[in-house]
Image 1 (tube, helix red, strand yellow):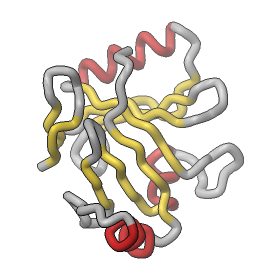
Image 2 (image 1 turned 90 degrees about the horizontal axis):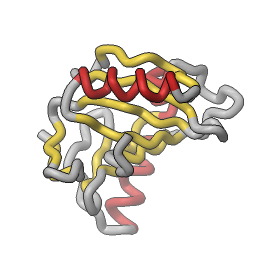
Image 3 (image 1 turned 45 degrees about the vertical axis):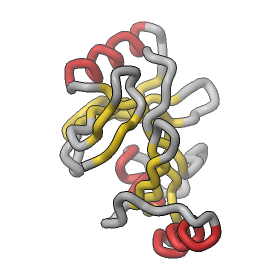
Length: 140
């Protein structure tokens, strides 16, 4: 698996309030604000997503023990790459939280947990532009 990061997603208790914090206090400019907020960072995206919806996307109950209200993500260039990564990780004994599947937002993703139950989304996002090294270059 490549040593890189595509997204950090924070589960927001109040999406508008959290978005306004970053816009007003940090003076950051969002690149998407429809149901989810994206801030393009230096080679990755910081996403703000309603916490309940993030839990639902992972496939756990909101407020479930161990659910930390954030996820980390690595995006790949195809569904086949995602499947290959999951096959490799499963063979290495990594805990699969949600097997890869078509996502409501138009992509393909699943979740695994590290040894301290931090959640990693392994995804293909057809709307994401990546450079040759896999850094996020933009989002449609």
